[in-house]
Length: 94
Image 1 (cartoon, helix red, strand yellow):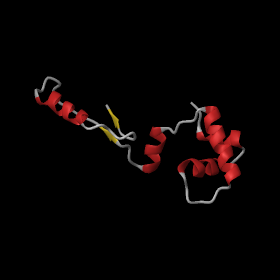
Image 2: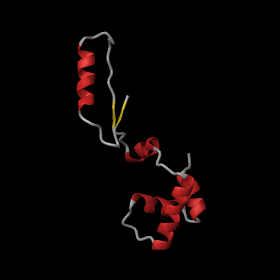
Image 3: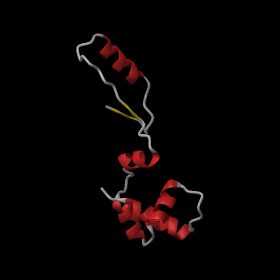
């Protein structure tokens, strides 16, 4: 898995600049640099690391269930209800 640092190195830009391009920052970045970063992400097959983003944003969009008894008759119903609504692409379930 490629890192943002590797994308920046391949695009010959600073890590902050690559981050601005990928996050759609309001900070101005030239179209040449934007194209270079986008090409580097495709070449390296870069995907953002969800754990790193969660640390930076201080929230994870993870839904967890803690049950004291796995044989509790309520547990299967609650899990089925939680799966009835399709999750957003940014939400993980365990």
